Every structure is written in structure tokens, then in C-alpha cells.
Amino acid sequence: ITRMASAFPGPGVVPALPLLQAAAKACGELPTRSLTTAPGLSYHLDLTADGMSADELRDFFTAALAASRKKEPIVETGNRYGVCDDFHRLNGELLMLEFKQSPAWAALSTTDQARAEAFLGIVLYSPELRSRNPLHPSVLDACVIGNLLNFPKHVLGLPFAAYATDGNEALSLVLYSYRQRAEAAGAPPPHRLLYLVDGPDSAPPPPDAARCAQRLGMQMEVAAGLEALGAALRGGAPPCAVVAPFGCEPLDAASALCSDRGVGLHLLVSDSEWRGIFAAHAEPVHYALPAGVTSVSIQEGMMRCGYSLYRDAELRDLHFDVALAWQTAPD
Image: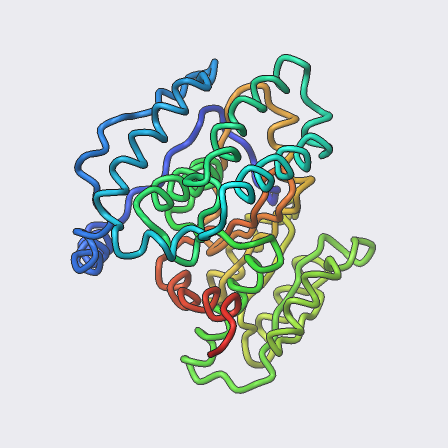
């Protein structure tokens, strides 16, 4: 029986790595362990069904900043923008005003708006917390980003994650990795992608997804249904990857076809689909994606950045340095 991804009750967990993969990961992290470990950070946020208070969040960031100061003295000036105090104040006020004019703010109740303003004020009105440069991550940045990445990992059940400026960048990075993997295996251009839809009458690929592929020199072809997908996978050189929307109905069967052919299956989660998960469930849920799903990208919207998830670290690491190159001007 084919079906789309199904939700299961409970918050989910990040899957444990196999022993050999975990050992290799630990060995690879040894050279930087002394730079990224802060033994002085002993404060933990207690995330309950009732959330947390603004005072608890303020205490956490106070402890995190204290630990960071012990670890990042040589990059401190490069990690925050060196501007006058008036700029910090004005920038914080503008960011708060921008959020108060957003649909996300309008959707909150009066009580939740006051709560959100208290949380945002802790970060936006603090030069040490707001004006941080993710191109120079520190202990504090790693702590915050790591917790952000854990959220979609728990929901969708894949062990590795990354974040990007927006969903298009997240998708582009993943597609770049698939292209790199195909080139390493000796696949000549043009590099093909298959976009799976339920049938001939289904909506075409999102224009941005097709443009991301085109930007990378990849050809995106539509496979309308499982029969078309099977024929495309069996005929000629295999594609770099198969891309499917999160709501794709024949997900189990598509996963099996991709696994049999040794082709990665990437799920593209739109912001409306991501919001739909939480709108449809009053209690926490998680997903057990088929084994053939090798990566996921989530569009920005409910979350301010794009996110990507991976079943193995190798695929993620193929684009590890690309984002820095894309966002950094040449000398």
C-alpha cells in the first residue's frame, strides 16, 4: 500500500548513529573539540509544555555569554559588528518594529504578543546577542544553532542537519551535494533530476525548485506517478536524485524504487506543509520517513531560515564549505 508520510504521536528522537559512523564522527571532531566545548556552561533550559519565562531565557543567555567570553577572545571583534551604541539601539528597535508588523505577530493573542516581545527584547536590544555573524560561529552561536537544528531533526527523524539563509539556498546546497556525488561516481553531464508528482494532473514542480536546479546546471524532469518514475529510473543513466513534495502520496513505493536503483530521494517541504503539521495536531508528533528518503529541505516562513536534513553526514559534508563561498565576497 502506498501512502504519504504519516505522523506518529510523541515528540520523536534524533536517530542514533551506527557504532562505526559514531566513532568516525568523534575522531573527526577531536581537533576542534577544545575550541567548541565550554565546560563552564552548566545552565540548562527546562522546556515544558508551558514553555519558559523571559527571565529563564535571560539567565540562560547570561550564562552562555559568560562561557563564550572564555573561549573566543581572538575572534570577538570579527564575530560582532563594531558599530556605535546608537546604531545598536536603533537597529534593535527597527527589528522589533519589523516583527510587530509581520503576519506572525498579528496571528498571536494579546497575551502571546506580550510574551513574544519580552523574548525578542532580550536578544534584539543586546548588542552581544543580536549582531552576530554566523560566518564566524562561536560557542554561543553553536549552542543556539544546534538547538534550532534539533527541532526539525526530532520531527522528521533524520540525524544530520544544516541551516541556510532561506529555503532556496537549503535546496540548492542539497542539490549541489547530489551533483557532486554523481560527478565523483563518473556521471557525465547533463546531470538529471526527477521531480515526482502523483499523476499527470498534479501541479508541476515549484518554479523556484526548477530555477535552483537550473542554476546548478541540472535538468529537472517530471515523473508523473510511480510507473513513470520506475521507467525513468530503469532507462539510461540514473538521475542524480529524485525530488518529491512532502505530501507525495506514493512515498513508500517511491522510496523503494529509489533504493533499488541506488538513487537518493529528497523531500521538499513547503512552508504551508510545515505549518500544516502543527495546525493539524494539538500534541507533539513525529514522522518515520521511509529508508529511501536521504534528505529533506524545509522552506522558510514559519521558521525564519531554510533547513535541510540528511540521513548520512557524507551528503551534508559535500556542501560543507559552499555556503561560505556563496556568501563571501572575493578578495
